[in-house]
Length: 407
Image (cartoon, rainbow, N blue to C red):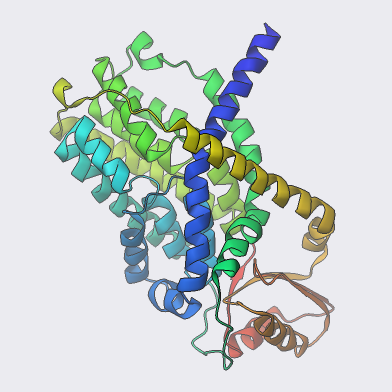
């Protein structure tokens, strides 16, 4: 019996890994392209200033992108590290994985045009709500309006590939792998035909579906045929199906783990709270106004297995390299995190000249004994006695770089 459970668990985590692989690889590729195409000044100008406009722009930017809750992670992390505000980053994180051009078209074919139009609109609204809550509750980053006075070297396709498949996975690989292992446990504990067997409908179905879907991994595209099958069974109302379509793709344990590390614990609470509340609220509205007829429901879509296998092998290689490289070359990171007197994320550094400029600005402040800066992640650890944190922030801002605190 134990062997059977282990086999089922292995099948669950391997299926989850292969399911997410193409979307996460796509997310890395998009991040690499953003790294060489979109300048930090462009991001700062459009998404960096706290306020409604930046949050709305981020949501609009995210809705059509074909990224799942795992694929959106590296893109959002890249946007934040290159100047986007926390509100805009969370708006992008919430709105992007719920939809995408491919999932919208599949929704149209399986669940009808009204449902297909409703999904992206609600994704946009939810993203804006989450982004605005973030900017109200979370302290603002220390932004600067001063421009750096040196030219950055032109980035190449090689730079994009290195950034996408070596640099970004350094922070994402370990929490991602842990998340997959935990999500695998969830998939074997939740019965496949739960709603069909127990006939749960209405508010109880929506609530339970939200609690079940939030920790699970499922992409926006793959969620559509599953939701269609649940509706076809006769025991799941459209509103509860919508909760599944919204909460499932937008969240999973891996995403939550990475968001906590990148943006902080408070952001995770806002992220989950916004998705849960909006899913239930809009699900109740859908139950009242939208009817899905059986003729709208099509057969479940089959995945291209070869694509998932190849992507899975590539993702496994990327994750193993990132984990092993971090283990052998960065053993003191946790000690540095704990012992640093001040820990900051300096946003906008793109070259060694930037790093040196920031280091000089920090060393010019009172009481500084040592500074450790990670150019790619922006993590900056400062050591000394009687350090004036505000003086350091002002000094960094004065040389043209914005700051986010490590939560």
